[in-house]
Image (cartoon, rainbow, N blue to C red; front, top):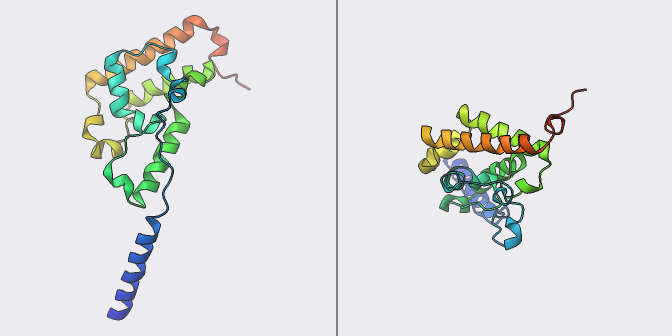
Length: 167
């Protein structure tokens, strides 16, 4: 029995060591072209809101993630990569200017809704990144800004271009 446990332990250790060589690509893009479609190129983002976005949103919702030390250990890196890919698919502030107007409008609505419901930033993220947890004032600032962006969009585009057509 002890021999089997020792063998299993060695096999698991070998697997752990082997998977360290299989890493996902990093979400880091500092080339100037990477910022061409950034939200700041199409809508004003006050410094206070930009600070909130950087500390609480950009790791998963931009083309530039600041990786913690534990992102170098598998399978954690895979798990983090999955969150980043999923986050960027939902909303990517680095690509926001390239979105269709209807999507921009909808994404700002979702930002408001998810911040109000404390769904963003994710609890699993704020457990480790305490600085990313939003205070009531930060939430209000982010919600007010997203409402301003929505109001700007609404003022510049016809209403039927902002809503999904119902079948």
